[in-house]
View 1 (cartoon, rainbow, N blue to C red):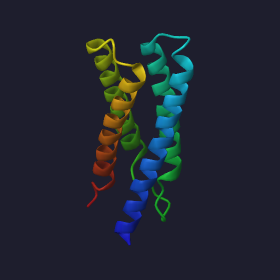
View 2: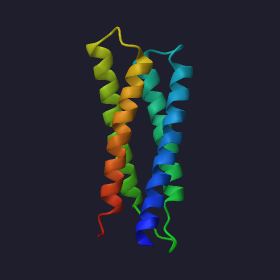
View 3: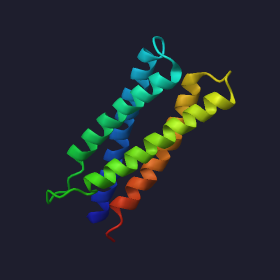
View 4: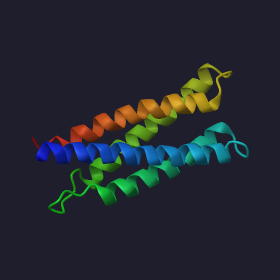
Length: 128
């Protein structure tokens, strides 16, 4: 039963991270026409981070009412993943200026989502 709950929490983490990434992508698409790529990406990434953190903290409660992962753990994992995401995006744009910003955003988002999943699982399974 405990393994099923952990699996459900992980699937919830993936779903809510996808919602945050969608907010990030949609906001970036709206902002990149008016602002430079770096500024638009920073603002959209921050908005996605706020949405993900809020939704994850609200929905990661176990049946006993405790949090599966502490608020500090969620914030740490998401902050490091966001920094990784932004650094990859800026690096890709700087190395290859001909690369479409949307392609760089997609690659950096997938890489940071993988890191976020690994970090979340480390915090969620730490007590065992």
